[in-house]
Amino acid sequence: MEKTINITVKVWRQKGPKAQGNFEEYKLNNITGDTSFLEMLDILNEQLVREHKEPVAFDNDCREGICGMCSLYVNGHPHGPDSLITTCQLHMRTFNDGETITIEPWRSAGFPVIRDLMVDRNAFDKIIQAGGYVSVNTGGIPDANAIPISKIDADEAMDSASCIGCGACVAACKNGSAMLFVSAKVSQLALLPQGRIEAKARAKSMVAKMDELGFGNCTNTRACELECPKGVSISNIARLNREFLKAKFSD
Image 1 (cartoon, helix red, strand yellow):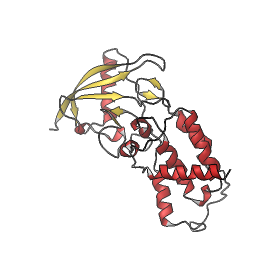
Image 2: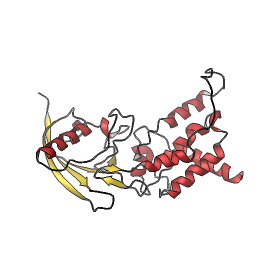
Image 3: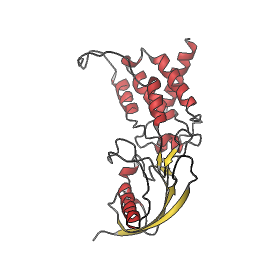
Image 4: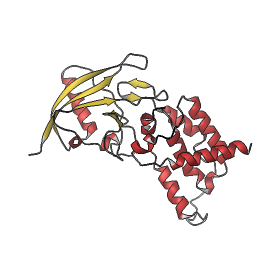
């Protein structure tokens, strides 16, 4: 018979963006180790509904570590204490019997709370709209080797493109900086010839939009890199700085 645990969850409850929030504690019994963290929240909500109480609002979609919507702060860590996973990939075997688990939404001026554990992450979409794209008519599917690209550049571009835009980097940063996200999106295009045409405008526009939306400055503590579920490297931030300076000095 599979071992089960009894836990207490300390959950942030907030009725709306302007409402004052607070933590509420709930007890859950007989949670199996194979239960995912989001399934545990489903069980909690079923329990609250049976008790005629308001269920906890939280974001989720694919539950496969792809979309990044399961943006929760668990025991002081974005996505939880395990490395290189999203919250939906976190399982209850990580926790101990009798443990109290603290669950919060992302904390950032750029991600205002909508309700309970849900935050508004539209700021990332606005940053992408500011320059995270290429405006080129590619026509039909080109031959794979039509534009020579070195393997090193291709690999680095793919690594940068692995960023899922979940916002864990912002939540982990003491300044609420979005530099890792922005730099990953700039890098995946800056490393490829298709992205060089708009490189100057891209770097300046995306950094300006990031600043406008209230994200903080990077102070190189590397907390973003440590907590990123996809292991995106802060070397991208160095590349973003180079792209930004080249754009400014070439004006």
